[in-house]
Image (cartoon, rainbow, N blue to C red; front, top):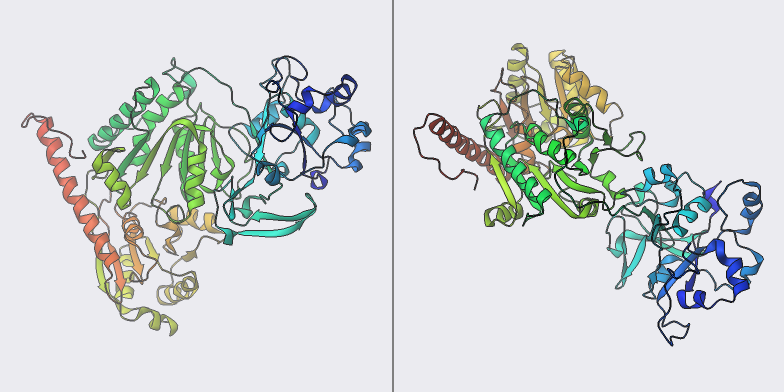
Length: 602
């Protein structure tokens, strides 16, 4: 069936009208009405209430064009088809959903019908999601049968908000981010959201379909379930263990219903082993029957986390979602997703973990933060994992409004390499002449002669190829460049990980999520505005991650130090100082040389 010709308009019926239909008309309409009609379960109008606009409870019947009638008659199915019959000539005229909701009406949906057997594939697509009709490979007739029997609900994609609208999928209410078109579906000029158009068009006539969740039992700690057993055999450092235990305590309070706060932050330096800190709490959550989400702004991080979690939880259905990925609509027990893909989710997860919360584009794109909020269930907890929290989150942590723990030492116990600012002259002018600053060339030669791999970060995509060519001409080594839209991006990153590529020239797209043993790091043009404190801290965090090579060179080549550079260097030094205190505290405690004090992260 071709859904492209379906007109997404609806005939609104006040429930009071339906309750007063003559028997012969109600019989003709039976296959278009909720299964509860005309039983006592069907809501009755208030006493002495006239069937007029004062009744705001309505049932909506979708308009299906007459060209489908013949197809409907030829299709075989045990379920009756909600086709438009000649008896429906008295229906009110159809309206787009945005016009119906503007009348402040309440859509009626019946309770789930215990005698109806729902299609499991429809449930797999819609459970915990809100999807467009175009995303569903099912006939509208079958979807409507699930609506009639209470298993599927739909709601307007756009609602009016003052002089503008709000998109219910991405939260956009900026009138500049709405467009209009002459819509073949609703037969009028129709508004649509441009903010999330890449996920499919949400317009004024667009319904978003969702599955009605089971009531389920109250959340509580479940019995041991071996399929969720953690198979990771590594050992947490004392600093990792402290963070893991605090998160576990927070999660246990949620499972027991005794939690006061619903947000927790792990503030841990780059290379602290944040993923391993999550393992035990995720195991506990899965065994407690929770739906678990790990979301991150970057596809590269999803691709790095997926094999690690599949190895740690081999009996668990781990689902990875990212742009360009396959099979985006199956269900997983543990979901790893880019924040963009969360725009399709709605009240799906009990435990939401946001990894790299400080990363672009999450920090600047409100629709991604809206998507995260929408993805959590009404009762859920959110865990933010970050090396560079913003000032708002730091304040919330210091005031105790969110649970938190700070880990200022890497898992191998060594301090972070402190970046060194090096003056590189007018680097942009030099590049125009196909030259690189001499200090940068000397630095590259030193580490190439030491047989090291090198990350070289640049501020603009346009600089990648020129820099790559100069390096190849100067040193004749295997060099690649990569950016977010590079079709060979994954292949190039894999080659670098495997040691086949000596120098990888990159934009900030690889500032996080990629770990390479013994890599040396330089930022060319570190004074460019793109390099914020957060970005520079993350870039510096690429070096020294291996316990075999915990040191590394990090250099910011610049044409004038910026405040962001200085803040990044100060940030790293402060974390190293705190890490030294943690090491001292841990050592004194282990040797019984000091009374147990409050943890330093409080």
